[in-house]
Amino acid sequence: MIETIGTVFRNDEITPGYKKLTLRFVEGISIRAGQFAMLRPRNAYEPLLRRALAVYRADDSRRLSFLYQILGRGTAALACLKPGDQVEALLPLGNPWPVDAAGSSELAVVVAGGVGSASVLMLCEELIDAGVQTEVFFGAASENAAIGCGLDDFRAMQLPLIITTVDGSLGERGLVTTPFSRRLAAIDGSRSRVYSCGPWAMMKAVAEIANEHGAGCLVSLEAPMGCGFGVCVGCVVAVERKEAGEYGAYKRVCVDGPVFAADEIRWDVAGMSH
Amino acid sequence: MPIQDEADILDTNLSVEIAGVGFRNPVIGASGCFGYGLEFSELIDLNRLGGFCTKGLSARPLAGHPPARIVETHGGMLNAIGLQNVGARAFIEEKLPLIRRYDTRVIANVFGYSEEDYMETIRILNDGEGISLYELNISCPNVKEGGIVIGNSAAAAARLTESARRLSERPLIVKLSPNVTNIAEIAKAIVAAGADALSLINTIVGMAIDVNTFKPRLSYGTGGLSGPAIHPIAVRMVYEVAQVVSAPLIGIGGIASAMDALEFIIAGATAVQIGTANYYDPLVTMKVIDGLSDYCKKRGISRIGELTGATFN
Ligand SMILES: Cc1cc2nc3c(=O)[nH]c(=O)nc-3n(C[C@H](O)[C@H](O)[C@H](O)COP(=O)(O)OP(=O)(O)OC[C@H]3O[C@@H](n4cnc5c(N)ncnc54)[C@H](O)[C@@H]3O)c2cc1C
Ligand SMILES: Cc1cc2nc3c(=O)[nH]c(=O)nc-3n(C[C@H](O)[C@H](O)[C@H](O)COP(=O)(O)O)c2cc1C
Image (cartoon, rainbow over all chains, first blue to last red):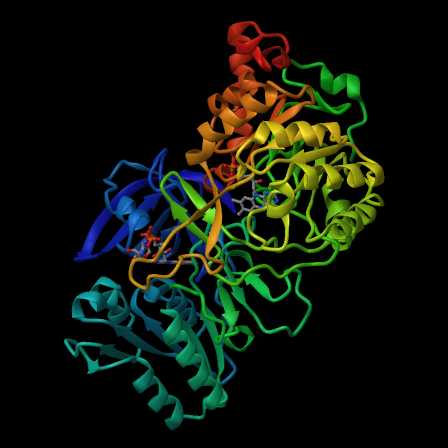
C-alpha cells in the first residue's frame, strides 16, 4: 500500500455514463487482479472522501486504468479530470482473487454484473495465464451499459462469453443469473469455481445458485468506504459467526475483502446499498 | 516503547505538556480515525507523531451497527459505527505489544453503556503497559443507552469523571459532546470533578435521508457529523471553554491543515486531534506537524505553547 499522486494520461468516455481513466505513476506498483485504489482529484474540496475503484487493467506497473460508471459526486468529479491533471491515490488495497494454477480439472465461471466487470477483467487474464478453463457470463442493463462496462475488452480475450441485457438490446434478454444457472445445471457444479462481482442482489443470487450445484463461489463486494485501509470500520459486511473474528460479526470490505467466500457472507442482512 | 527521555523531546519548539505528560508535538490522531495506530505504520513515521487516541474501547468486544455506517455529506461525513472494537483485554494483549515498538504517546479512549462499564474498562486498561493517558468518551452520539445521556448532563458527567478519576492510574482527559446548549457549564463541572484535561469536540448529531426510499441513509438513523464542516463550531466551543477552565484543552474538529490546527491553539487549545482528514489524506498528521513547525520558525516562536489562547491574553 502506497500513498501517491497519479497523473491523468487519458480519461475517455466509453459510452454515455461510463469512462475509463488511465493514470501514470512515478513508481512501479504491482497489482493483483481484484485489488482496488482509493482515488480523488488532487486537492479537491468536493468530494471529501476518496472513491474506491478496482484496477481494471495494468498496462504496465506505472500505468493503470480504471473503468467506472458515473453515479454521484465522487465519480462525477473523476469524470471531469483531463490529461495532465493529478489524482491522489492510495493503492493497491484489498485482497486479490485467488487463482490456483491449472492441473486441477476445475472450470472457472466468471459472472460479472454491470460495472462489476471492472474487477474481473484482470482475473480473466490471470486465469488464462494459469491455464484454467474459463467461461464468462456478462450481464448489463442495456447494450450501452454492456459496452460501457468494457464488453469489447472481454470479447477480445476470446473466452466463451454469454451476454445478457435487461432490455434485450444485446444478447439474451433478462438477468445474467438465468444462463449462469442453466450452465451450472448442465455441468458438474462441484468441479467448477465461481467468481462473481456485481450488484448485491445479483451476487446473492449467484451465491445461491452456486451453492445448489455444489460449486465453490467467491464474490467481490462493494460498500461505500471512508478510508479504504481498515481504519474507519465504515464499509463492513455481516459475516457468519464461524470463528471469533477480530471484529465479531462484521468484517471490513476494504482489508478483510473485497473478495470473500460467498458462504461466509450473511446475505440475509440488509443494508449493503450497492 | 514509552518515551524515555522527557528532556530530549521537550527540546523542540513544538513540544507540549498535557497533565504532566510530554508530547513531542501537539498533533494527535483522533479516536476512531486512527485505528490502533498500527494501520498507519506503512504510511507515516509514527515516531514523529505527537500521539494518537485508540478507537473507543469497551470492557467486552462490540460488533457495532449494521451497514450503512457512513455517508458523505457536504464538507463532512456522518457515521454511526456503533463503537465496534476488539475490547480492552484484546487491545492490551494483541495491539499494545505492537504499538510499544513505536515512540509515540498512546491515549486509550474509553466508553461504556453505564458507569460500571466505564470502570471495568479502566480497570482492565490499568494493567496495560505503554498507555500514557485515558480519554473518556462521554459524548458518543451513536449509542442510545450510552454517552449521550452522560455527556449532556453536567451532573452525570461530573459523577462519572469523579469515579473514573478515583480508579484511573493515569491522567484523565474527558472528551466533550458538542450536542449541548452550554458546553462551558459542562466543562466547568467536569474539571471540578477532577478531569486533568478536556478534549473537544466529538461529532455533532446529524441525519441524511435517501430521497428514493424516504429512509435515513444510515441504518442507525442519525449519525455523528465530522470533517471540515464542523471546524468553526469546534473552534468556537474551544474558545468558550477556554474562558472558564484552566485545565489544558485539546481541540478537535475538521482539521485538515496546519492553519486549521493553529486556530484551535490560538482559541485556547494546548494540542489538537485530527480525525476524518486521515481518511482522505493519510499523511495529514505529518503535513500539519511540518506546517506548525514552519509557522513557528517564520514567526520566531520558540515554543508553540506561547500561542495557546494568544489572541485573548
Ligand atoms: C472495492 C471496490 C471496488 C469498486 N470498483 C469500482 C469500479 O471499478 N468501477 C466503478 O464504477 N465502481 C466501483 N466501485 C463502486 C464505486 O466506489 C462507487 O460507485 C462510488 O463510490 C460512487 O461514488 P459517487 O460519489 O459517484 O456516488 P455517491 O454520491 O456515493 O452516490 C451513490 C448513489 O447514491 C445516490 N444518492 C446520493 N445521495 C442520495 C440521496 N440523498 N438520496 C438518494 N440517493 C442518493 C447517487 O445518486 C448515486 O446513485 C467499487 C467499490 C468498491 C468498494
Ligand atoms: C468513523 C468515526 C468513528 C469515531 N469513533 C470515535 C470513538 O470511538 N470514540 C471517540 O471518542 N470519538 C470517535 N469519533 C470522533 C472523532 O474522534 C472526532 O472527535 C470527530 O470526528 C471530530 O473530528 P474530525 O472532524 O477531525 O473528524 C469518531 C469519528 C468518526 C468519523
